[in-house]
Length: 214
Image 1 (tube, rainbow, N blue to C red):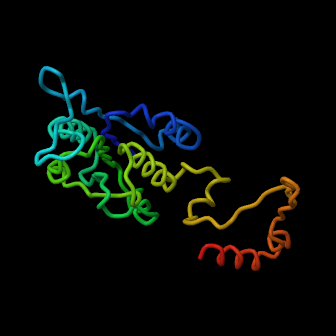
Image 2 (cartoon, helix red, strand yellow):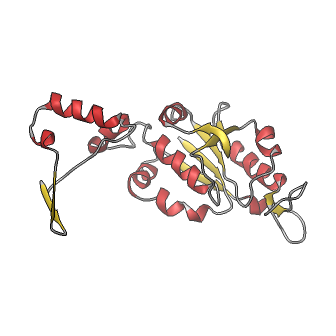
């Protein structure tokens, strides 16, 4: 699977994406991540990629040409005509586990990350990109949403998760988890592991986990 990230600041997420499970997956060539910086396609004397918004308003907007050229280069490196094209927006479809599973079936995923006050609206229209949101809040850029999707989708790529981690694949919302010591003493108070987890009764434990997921 190949993730194509259009971003002004790929260095902001690359350390995370090359570490731990994702780093090993990249070393094994199970997933690939490429970056395409719109700044390389900026035009004009000052090579700017941001402009003031029409109609007024605060902040600056990423101009469309540089972003489209970066996305165009990314698409030239895809091997599938069914490349998923994702544009991050607070009014987009909510990203969830089901969407992650569907995206994991794709060979290529294009992730367009915005900055400042956003990207010119003509970009997603021209790219025919799907608007996606990772939550009802605003971030300073689209790099974290891109990393979130890469992480969530990569988990479903065969071989990415090892044997010890494979059971995580079906987990949507974790119940409470506990480990040793059985009794934690903290600031004079004793905090115990729930007794049901110590019984060895798998049916009771599963019932407890199901109840906690609700």
